[in-house]
Image (cartoon, rainbow, N blue to C red; front, side, top):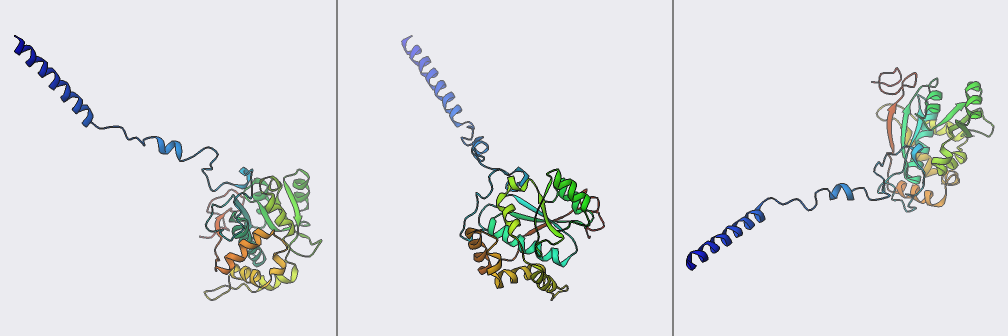
Length: 267
């Protein structure tokens, strides 16, 4: 009897051991399961690197002052109105180079026509336009500056010129560093005529970004007056490194509705 009891006890111990081993050999939960989702976005981090300027509240945080503009996360995206004009092409590439490589924002050219840039600006599809005729758009200009939708921040031409730099009024809050840059951005009539006049088409032509880079290389005494020292340092470093590209491009067709298909969007 005693031997039988000991045998039964032994069987129970063996059975229990087998169950433990079976459970231990089963699939175990991944210890990192769910952790990635919790740690990928730590508190205070920004998920979307392509923030629009309207959503920005702390501009300038990424400015390095050491020329590393292509190696750091860019700030918000500034949208500039672009149409078929050598002056606009030159000015957008000149300001764009400084904004991208100096201030560390992204720049996007938005294709519009002269009749549609006004709607694009007031609707927020565009943040700034460098050539806006005050006299030919007097009603729109007065209504929207009076309502605080847009701001006249100066002119790229001579003082008191009819063509004005017009920006979204919200730029003073979302990107005050860029708003201040636009107020100082003035190349003068002669420089615009010389450099935009050098832009040519064709495979061997001089492109607008080359004209802009030539201006930056040859006239630091002008453009360095527009920017603080850390921005100047960044720009000079990327010029020395031979950086030329800066722009993404979309299209706002006639009517300002966005997307492809308008007669000014190309194919």
